[in-house]
Image (tube, rainbow, N blue to C red; front, side, top):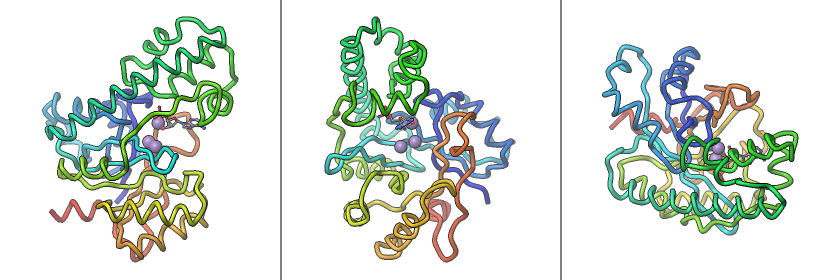
Length: 282
Ligand code: AMP
Ligand code: MN
Ligand code: MN
Ligand code: MN
């Protein structure tokens, strides 16, 4: 069964609308798709609830409500994916409103920093690029490219947006444990998003996974085959040690990306439990 449990839409920094993402997932023969926008469920909500879901049934694909929550841990930005969540849960929705406020405040601060470098009306333009108030750093990257300040996304991050660079703003994101508890309150399972991608040493990765597991996390996420296999080996050993399941997600944002293609993940390793088996049981 082909699954993709980490994807973005225009509700955050993805370029496909939820409907177009769904069409693309069907084309790619994905059987189980989770939409996991940064700190919002607006995209998946529009697909599952507002269109009352009936076209979905005839397509044969199962769409799960998900979210990717921004957190911080020992000075690093860590992302926690929530899968199979109840979209009506007040505790989760209230927390996501707080996340949205933090994001908006950060966006205004980033805009002010860029204006110090002579750019004008940054916030207004980025708001247009984002198509709403859920502004992420990729929208600023797009702005910087548009203004010919950088040549591509990579340069936008390495010169302006990445941690410690010219327009980086530190955000007081919640603790990992809080994000896990909101997800569980909404009946979902918490996944540590792309653990191979954080710039952490092996020993710090062990501590991170231990903290995630102790606080009720259910699975570690594995991405495309391009991910570093040494890191993957360590992460599989940590799944065994902490009795965590495996989640598979591409972290799809847009069709142009070579490595984050829809459904592009490693296969489920032998003798490991897929996180989807946990909620398909219940
Ligand atoms: P934010 O959620 O606003 O902090 O932005 C983080 C998002 O920026 C990630 O989900 C990626 O989509 C993107 N991103 C982070 N680092 C880079 C990078 N070095 N190059 C391109 N995109 C990046
Ligand atoms: Mn993103
Ligand atoms: Mn992420
Ligand atoms: Mn993501």
